[in-house]
Image (cartoon, rainbow, N blue to C red; front, top):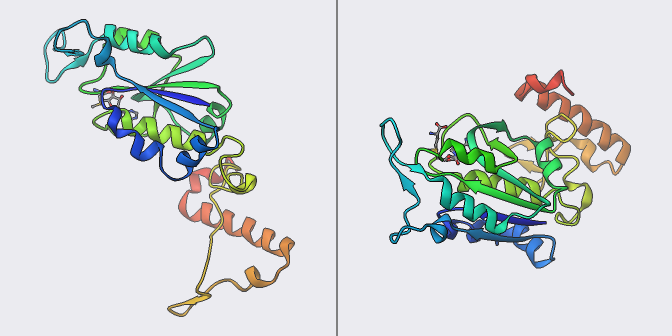
Length: 223
Ligand SMILES: C[S@@+](CC[C@H](N)C(=O)[O-])C[C@H]1O[C@@H](n2cnc3c(N)ncnc32)[C@H](O)[C@@H]1O
């Protein structure tokens, strides 16, 4: 997969996109990514990309032209173009699985008070990472990229590592334990040392249901 980020702050990306599992995905040739800056497409001699909102009000608005040129510079026929926005469809694990099948994502990051409304015509979708407002779309774009890339076959070491995780089957993940076996008097459940894979699987399924009921009862009915 290739991901192009359209951003006024390209320096924010490498520390996240080149680290850990995403970095390894790039080394393995499963991910390519790049940034394109609307500032490089501004006709203005000061590379201005924003202006005051018509009708007045606080802040600045990203202008449509540099944004359009930046998107067009990377967009191909097969690209899926997504604007990160608090007004978009809520991003979910299901959406991440769907996007992991795409060949090319163009993730567009807003700043300031947002973008000129007419720029929305440039995008296939608008995605929100939650009902709160961040200062820019860069963190949301990297949240989406991270959740999507780990779903690409071969990115995680064990193929089934992603399938048992929270939300995949509608439940939260089962509780995990590692050394020490006893910590401050709290013991790891005995069944996990039984070597009986069927019993362990059954215990994990029950524990996942119990955790979901306790922490996210809203998910139970769907599961
Ligand atoms: C300060 S916000 C603008 C918010 C806009 N005035 C509104 O209330 O809908 C600047 C940019 O951050 C990004 N952003 C902020 N919160 C987001 C969220 N929850 N999900 C996705 N993107 C978000 C968007 O790209 C947005 O254009």
